[in-house]
Amino acid sequence: MTRETVIVLAVAMLALGASAQTPPNPTAEEASMRGFGDSDETCQEWTDACVTCQRSDTGEPLCSNIGIACQPKAISCTRRAEEKK
Image 1 (tube, one colour):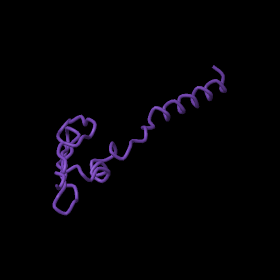
Image 2 (image 1 turned 30 degrees about the vertical axis):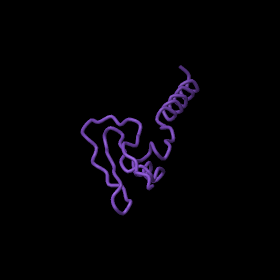
Image 3 (image 1 turned 90 degrees about the vertical axis):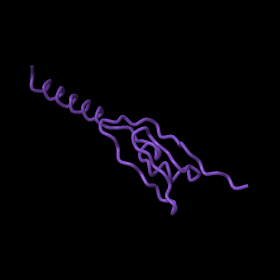
Image 4 (image 1 turned 120 degrees about the horizontal axis):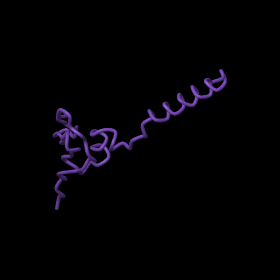
């Protein structure tokens, strides 16, 4: 192999490795459980199947710790505020 070929192959490997390590930009809901609570203020309790959050009396989210080897799913609201009649 010539020196130029080795250099071209090395640059190509570095470029491919860098592109494979770049994670996609998540939405606010996917990025954080707190972000989900901020975006949906009618939701009183939400979960990703690993962490559960609920809104405190002051409106701040209180979240549990993640379990060991838990695989989070899409965040969903499990309890909404009752509408005042």
